[in-house]
Amino acid sequence: MRRFDAVIAGAGAAGMFCAVQLGWRGKNVAVIEHSGCQGRKLMITGKGRCNVTNNCTADTVMKNIPRNSKFMYSALSRF
Image (cartoon, rainbow, N blue to C red; front, side, top):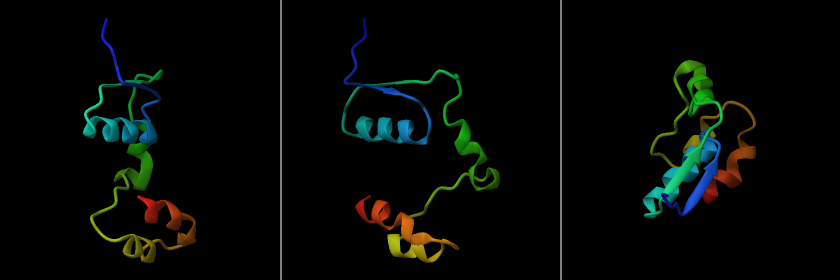
């Protein structure tokens, strides 16, 4: 039987992000997804282009959000 340091339920954006972070820290991770399709909703974000931020500062990201960027401030500043 294979052993894991962590088991993540759900292979959406948050689940995959968590798995990658743990993997970078040397942990053995299992991701369980009931639908059989990992990251499906990511494919429809950004009109099919997938919204992925680039290597700029949080302030630059916020300046380029057209409406209500303040709701993202705490998450971006912590990350």
